[in-house]
Length: 156
Image 1 (cartoon, rainbow, N blue to C red):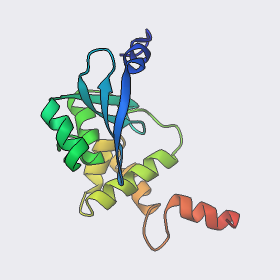
Image 2 (image 1 turned 90 degrees about the vertical axis):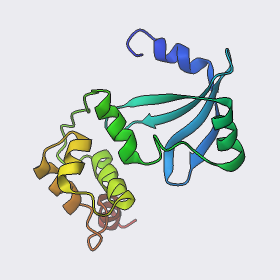
Image 3 (image 1 turned 120 degrees about the horizontal axis):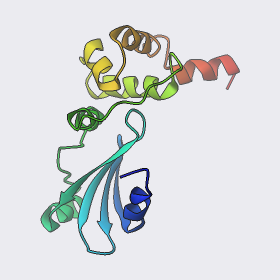
Image 4 (image 1 turned 60 degrees about the vertical axis):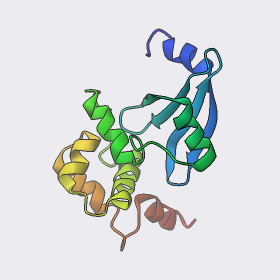
């Protein structure tokens, strides 16, 4: 998809049924209005700027809508990023040394899995290990997140 308007045409027929919500803000159950096919969609907008779709059976869609029982493929942001790498999608390149979206993503990855290494974060974000260390230093709990420090500096 992309480039020729295919993504707009596809998403024009897909309606959102349920957002996962909570900490999985990227995850949605959707259904095609044209054919009735159910889809689990992971909207990754920080690193790859892509949508990852998984076709669902009627039973899987019913388990999501009835019991909030989601398949595991996109259950963590780390899994979503690993999907992008498995599909050989190139991560976006950021010109800013500490862009907020990378800081937020590093924070989210650490929150999901506190023992994640700087090497793993670097790989997932498509950055160097040195930059990964800088991001994590910018998110240390004693200093607060980048956003928290900025708010304090601005007096918010």
